[in-house]
Image (cartoon, rainbow, N blue to C red; front, side, top):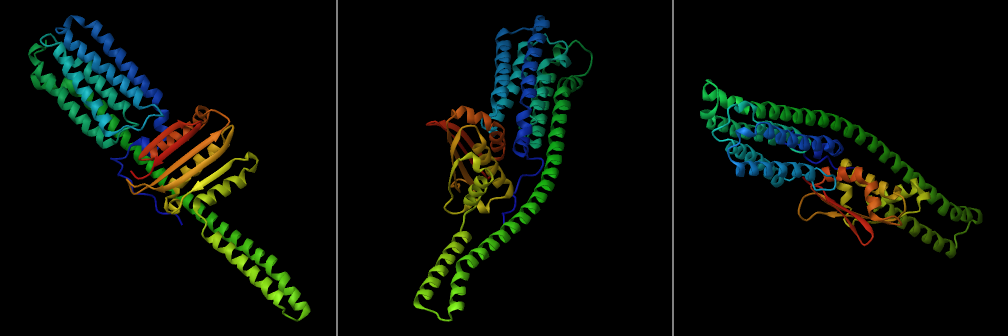
Length: 392
């Protein structure tokens, strides 16, 4: 029986790239569009309002930070890159603060219309672009921080504003873009996490029920096979003894030998590890592939994993066997010394280059990247090596 699904953070703390990695991976074209589009918007707006620029050095700092944000968004969302870390996300948000501050300093004393500044809008667009990769709680916190920064900058520029409105209204005018777009991004992330979690819970409950029925069917099949084995091995001896009416020493020796053989078979069946069962099942299903599958799990750690975790391992091994030119697959599983989860390593060798195998497994690698706490894919000595550690 599989272990229960590992405890996950609440919907506010969940990240879509952990919960639904393929959706997060498929969002990359949208993220790139956001990154390039907001950079183009900033450059065009600066050109149009260049007469308001009072400090070229601060303008240069603004543009450098802006391009850094664009490159960071594009780089960190590549499917072969490790998932966003808290450090890299914090660096991105720090750059957004730099953009707002440097932009305000570049127009110090000449910014007549605070409400049409592009920097707060860029921050809001970036928060929206981060929706597939960061939690709703983090997006909400940073929305409040950026809103406060934008409001403070609006107050600081009130003296140069060409409007009779009170300074507090300028603060609201300068920060409303961040607040509205950031709040929408937070709400969207929360809504998606709730919907996907509900669907996933129902799907895994159904899958667990089906898997339980399948395990009972396998157990019945094994029992029937062993009963047939007992009959095939033992009945000839019993029939011969019944016909002759005499039990000879040779009969006793043969019966003892048959009984020992049956005991060995039963012990082997009861002690089979889950990885061995997986390999045998995949080979039985696709014997025409002629792929050699080696497994290693000394402590049968995989059997204590959740159905979700074992399903990903099974999918990766099965896809690796199906990849063109695959000759051998080695699966090794053990307990991770740095977490409470398990560590899996899949090595694929074949006639095709490792890069071609990697390309074929890209969708599943994306899933592993999202579900695992640590993830690494390398090409070493002509083989593709996929390593990941469960246990968020």
